[in-house]
Amino acid sequence: MGEVHAAAWRSTDAELIGCASAHLDQAEALASRYQMQTFADYAELLNEVEIVDICTPTPLHKPMVLQAAKAGKHVICEKPVALLAEDARAMILACKEAGVRFFVGMVVRFFPQYRLARELVANGQIGNLCVLRLKRVSYVPQKSLDNWYFDPTLSGGMVIDLMIHDFDYGRWLAGEVDRVYARRSRSEVGPAQYVQAILRFRSGAIALVEGGWAYPPGVFRTGLDLSGTGGLIEWNSDQPAPVLTFFPPTSHDTASVGLPVSGLGEDPYTAEIRHAYHAIQAGTNFEVTVEDALEALRISQAVEESLSTGKPVLL
Image 1 (tube, rainbow, N blue to C red):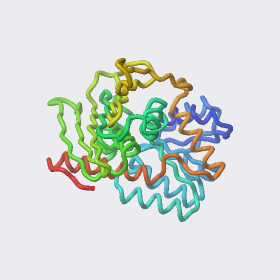
Image 2 (image 1 turned 60 degrees about the vertical axis):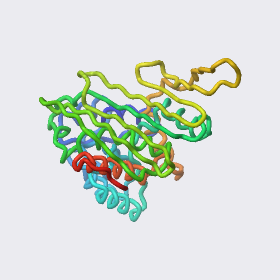
Image 3 (image 1 turned 135 degrees about the vertical axis):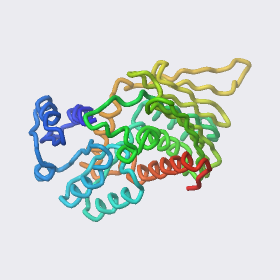
């Protein structure tokens, strides 16, 4: 992810100063590719920058954010913001007290298809939103240098690391969640798994969120299906970029419209970094707040609790 973010930063007029990694060879390779310095120590890096972009394993987010806040540096941090809600709150408070900006990369909000679908819902194009079906299924993470993904005490597991995106997106569309219920299917051999979570929103809408580490290596599929009182929005990653909308016919002909979207070629990580950078420069609001990231984490934790107890969990 550090490589992805570095490429995105090149689309801005910011100067890339340097990078640090627990694995020096990784830092040196990235620094060479983007003409940066390599820092052996995170504190030394902080002395040289105005903004730090944290793309480290999740357990390191809290101490690195707190250190950056103490040093008076603005922070961009990959999701999930932390493993525990109380840690996230401490990070948010530290940045507020230090007077630095804190942005968490909930990147699905910057995917053009997801943004378009949200705009259609917000504009009332499908009436009152009633049922959401969101899918995000990937292959089992490939072995990394530290294999930290496979340790739920480090990564949070598939729910917190992967499904959190759709929990955040569902809340962006339908508002606050008040109850969750979830079930998990596991492979008898290996870490493959599939989770289905039902979310009930205060608005009355309900969502089925499906997530998994279940596909063959290299296969990653996502999709959305949003049903309202006046229409339906569908999209999945196997079809062309524009979303499909279906509205009740106003005559004897049934309308089925594919909406073209401009800018589909823009990488969502680039859009995300550019947005955060400009908001920090201009002092304007982030489109996704740290409180949004916290709520997505709280929903993820509730889903994990439901998986453990087999019972619904109230937020």
